[in-house]
Length: 401
Ligand SMILES: Cc1cc2nc3c(=O)[nH]c(=O)nc-3n(C[C@H](O)[C@H](O)[C@H](O)COP(=O)(O)OP(=O)(O)OC[C@H]3O[C@@H](n4cnc5c(N)ncnc54)[C@H](O)[C@@H]3O)c2cc1C
Image (cartoon, rainbow, N blue to C red; front, side):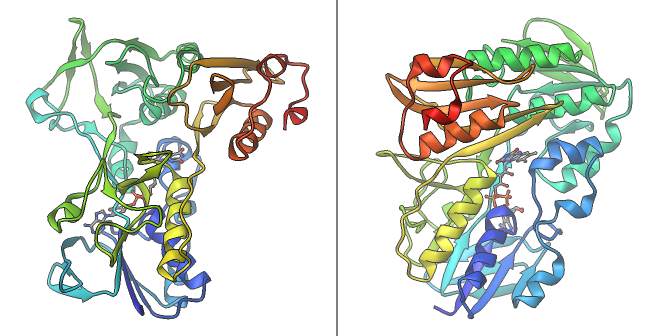
């Protein structure tokens, strides 16, 4: 194996090529990206960068020279159009590249509001890439009115930035509560209160009926009959794994590109990592959308490309910044039947610990880094603390490990 091609110059693709060189691979590496930018980090796009508190250069994962210095051919602004599995080639506009091993690190594509309800009007945005922010950021003028559709992390982070910049913010969530897909009712309550305290008008159980305007969005009609005047709209309504190339090439899909525990797809020469890949997990399969997963899975694939034969065992963790609150979470809470609340050391600090019977599944800590770190260590070593002791603020967290 002396020629690796990677499709997708995002978090996973960039981590993979760096790890390959770090492990001593001296064959050819080509990293192909559709976006015109050197690989960059996405989390600040809905946080510090959107707020104007982070310089653009700091988004880039490595300086451009890094790739030349490590003999990694970087092809940017170069969408791959097709994979020819049998011939082991990828097809670009006006070019073809052969590979011994191909890695798909194509990420995810944001869901858009349907054109039939005005989703294609000017002034309607999604937040996925740097180009989205270049278009969106000029809308964030003081006093402007924004409607945010979707109460997941991206919608809430955008709402926090907008509120801090003095915009009038309405956020609607069609589900019963914000963060319903990922967090317990207590965490939803925490963030609802936080946003309301900053003047965000959060409306739950309310969907979008339609957007109105001639050419450009001017108003919105909501499912409860309310009508709003708006200056612009942000849709934070989830993503789909970017599987179009894999599907056309006939690779097996299952909520993403289905890979085995080593990161290999249904074709022995094609691998996948990051947001686009679903992998075996506790007898089933999951797909994670997070930076830690993109990095760690990509690094595992790099090692396996070189013959390590080491299964990828995910250790899920994630964070979100809203106002001055840092949410950190470890583990996955699906299947929980009990939540223990533990007050944190300062105002606004609290952690929620998710259990199934006596087994600790996940922890969510708001502005309580210590609770997060102890929870993460416990989960990763499959240990569960005593619930009664955990809930008492005078129990030393370290004694639980
Ligand atoms: C606004 C925002 C905030 C986030 N905040 C957090 C956070 O706080 N914490 C956290 O853990 N995670 C966060 N995430 C999620 C995290 O950024 C992703 O999980 C991570 O970027 C996934 O890495 P990836 O390499 O799989 O995909 P990406 O980083 O999306 O990279 C995929 C790349 O592949 C390219 N590509 C796709 N198809 C082709 C093709 N045919 N040819 C060439 N190139 C192609 C795409 O253009 C893209 O550049 C956030 C994401 C967003 C959008």
